Length: 126
Image 1 (cartoon, rainbow, N blue to C red):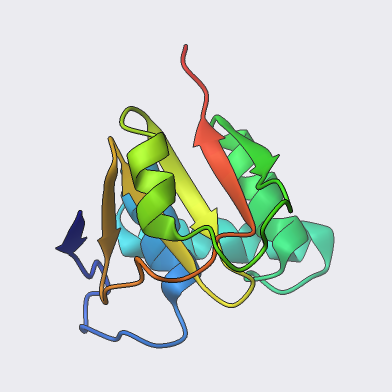
Image 2: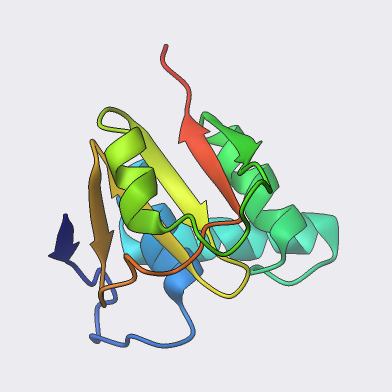
């Protein structure tokens, strides 16, 4: 199931999917997430959207990175991921896009259910 959401204050839908996805998954607003990623990038001397920066930021916010098995690299979709993960909070990476799944529902500004997930971050249960 897909629900449309766009946390960008100006309604922008291109170029900031990292900020939008992480904002939703962490419960932080867009600006807080953006500046948090910028600060993490400055500390690491890398861009805020770099995988190493987003990974460090998400880890600091209670997420663990996981990989998708490469058994059938083009046949597993985000929709199937949602079905396989009916509980929990996840940030999904496709290689060119980040989105959020919460309790089996895909939250994104566009319907990315047919995209192929490559990796994901799972919110650790405390």
